[in-house]
Each structure stands twice: as structure tokens, then as C-alpha cells.
Image 1 (tube, one colour):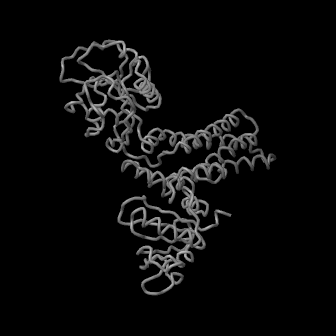
Image 2 (image 1 turned 90 degrees about the vertical axis):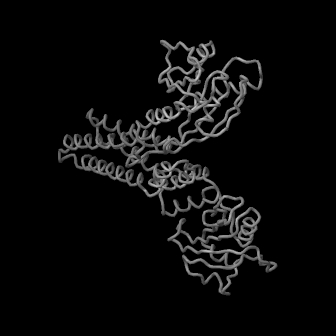
Image 3 (image 1 turned 45 degrees about the vertical axis):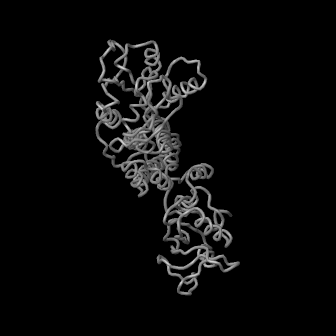
Length: 456
């Protein structure tokens, strides 16, 4: 029954601001606001026309006291975000003013909205599908214009249309199989079997193309995890400051200054990059520094890209060799820092991958590093494809669907009964439906929306 109750929440960030917006959605939204909103023109809010702003005051009905001066809008369902009646109260910003108005809304009969409940209602009421709903939170959390553009396109249904087309074509394949199974006397088995195999092959190529965008999509949505590692005092913190162009990390000549993880976001030509400055990796008896070193090693395992920093003014030491071995075959770039000093490194035959000379002190080589990061993950181009898979859940559903389609094609090619292949095709059809929410369990839907912020 809670899904049919009228809900309310603050939809703007709570803090010092000029305006805050409180959203109310549900069958009683207009009546609830009418109990606490007195218009300047003296009319009841129950008479308010949809899609107009109305000026007046939120009052405490028990005392008649004015709580705040507001503008109130009414959006009549189903032409609203949730496809229900929605009222938005524009009140003064600030914690006290906003919460005072919200408390009156609750006292008038609304209940507090749960995380993502407004968007969940839009999904349950058929206004948007699940992939579009997930794009809403991506828009809110976008860290670059490229991420914002990708999320906007998904919210407008680009991926949904692609998935709907694939499901429709799979349904067509199932219809072919139904004809063959139900009318065996027509001797359609060979022709239909070959056609089913060809159609499945074409669809599988299409799905593989979608999956090929998943790595780029993940980086655009979540950011590229970049870990700066090296032994103490090679210039890792100076490099972080140079990349951010601000003094974010403390820099001293004392080894072990950085003892904990420092994380910051950087926009590299549209790529959101989460840079982690780690504690210098070395053997140490200092308890606090040892915790930092252990955390640094953990960040190496999580990183999409490792930036290994060497001090070219000092010969290689055991700590450097240990780190090189620890990195192994992971994707990495080696920076030879302190190019302004005499070169004392001997790097012949060491597995260092891409090597770039830099100076964190004067910025030399920083531009080359940024360019190389872009080349490694986007082949030098940041153009968004027609359809980009950015969500990990979508990727997993596509992979499972592709596996079932492959099983079905193998069965058809091996001459196994088509009705058995139909079982795998139906399973693939259901996996595609998980992306748009057509075949997703209620528990998983609840989990997805629980990750949203309250008020959206």
C-alpha cells in the first residue's frame, strides 16, 4: 500500500541557497498542499490550474502563523515526472526554512519519500523504463560534460530502443521455431533451422558491438581509476598537485610524508579520472605508515591504470624492483620524474611499459601524460558512439543473453531439435528484458532505486 501513498521530500541540496524545492507526489498531493498553502489572491489551491506558479505563504494551520513565503506549482498526472499528481513548493533555501516547510507537508498528510522513490514511481507507472530511470542518477552524478551527454542520451531512451529492437527480432526468431514445431508435416525444418542460425548470428554480432563499448562506457560513467605509486619521496604528491594545478597534497623532503590515501577527480578532455595518491611503498616498522602502505597495495589492485613514478636523479633500489614486480602485467605508465636533475637511472630490459619523462616541479611532460591516458582508453578519440553501454548491470545482462544465444545457435547448427534451442532464446529474451525492467524481479528493482538520493 505504501506505493499508493502521497510522498514528499526535498529535491534540492540541503544547505545555504537562494531557493529550495520540495516535491510532493501522489493522489492527495494537491489536497495536502491546499491545507497549508494560502494564496495571495485568496483562492483555494484546490482550484489551481496545472502548470502555473502560484504565490502565497505556507502556514501552520494550528496557529495560522506564516512559515515561509513560497511559489507553488501543480503538475497534473499523467503529464508529470511520476505520472501522478505532483506539487512542487519553491521556498527559501537554508536548512531551517526548508525543513520547516517540509514538516508542515508531513503534518498535512504526506509521508517521507524513500531514496529514489519519485523515479521508481515514474518507472512503475510506465512513464520511463528501468534503463532510463538509472540514467537519472547518472545525470545527477556526472563529473564531465561527456558523462552528462551519455546519461542524457540514455535517459531519452536510446539504449531502450536498441534493446526493444533486439527483443522484437528474437521474438520473430521464436515465431519461426513455433511454426516449425507446430507444423512438422510442412518439412520446414532445414530451411527454418538455417534461417534461425543466420538471424541469431546477426543478432549476436549486434550484441558484441554493444558490449565492445562497455569499457569506455564504464570509464565515462564511473571515472577512470588511476593510482600513483612509487617508493617514498619520488614526487608522487608533487605529481598529484601538478595534475590538479593546486596544492592538494603536502610535499616535503621527508620520506613517508603521505601516510594515507588521497583521492581527487580530474577532467582530462572529458574523461573523469579519479586520481589516488598513495603512500610510498616500502618496508617500514612505523605502524601508521604500514597501514598506508597496505592501503596503497589495495588501490593498485583496484586501479584501471597505474602511474609508476621513478626519481631519475637516484639509482634504482630494491624498493623500485619490488614495485615493478608487484605491478606485473597490469596496464601502467612509468614516469621518470625530476627531469631537471642529473639522470642516474639505468632502465635497460626492465618491463616498464610506456615511459614518459616529466617534472612535477615545472609541469614538463604533464600534457604528454594526459594525452597518453586518453590514447590508452579511447584510442585518442572521445566521440560517444550511437549507443554506449555505461552500466555494469546492463553489461552483465548483455553477456548472459549473448551466452544463451550462442548456446541456441550451437544447438541449431548441430541439428538438435529447434524447440530445445527455443528455451535458450527465450532465456536470452528475458535477460534483455532485465535491462529495461520488463523481466526484472521486484527485489532487484527495489535495490536499484535504493542507491538513489532521497528526493529524486
